[in-house]
Length: 110
Image 1 (cartoon, rainbow, N blue to C red):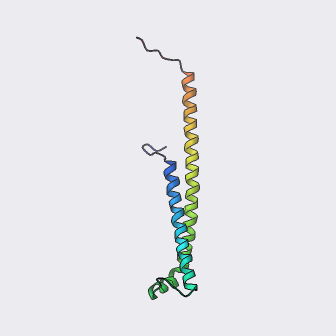
Image 2: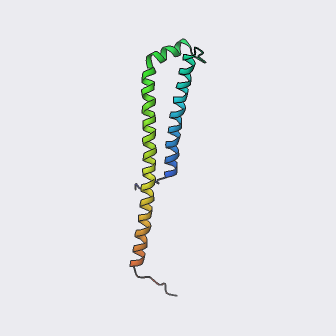
Image 3: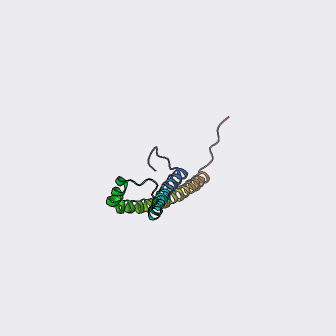
């Protein structure tokens, strides 16, 4: 472990979950907008928005798909980091116990 850096698996999992949630919300907003356009009842569509979508809509969809992929990878990475930290902690505890058992007990003089 790098000196001074602490692994915080719950925080890593929470951050990854936040990214996943943002991706889901973004996808839902895009889907709602698509439904509104299909129903010819756009809620906030303006010419500038339509032009932006025409130019960048595909790129935005690719970015959203990549965002969701990265978020899923971060969730998996957070889980792996948590498992590694738990395994390392168990190994440290086990090693300390073995070391303690192997060393003679030191008695303090009164």
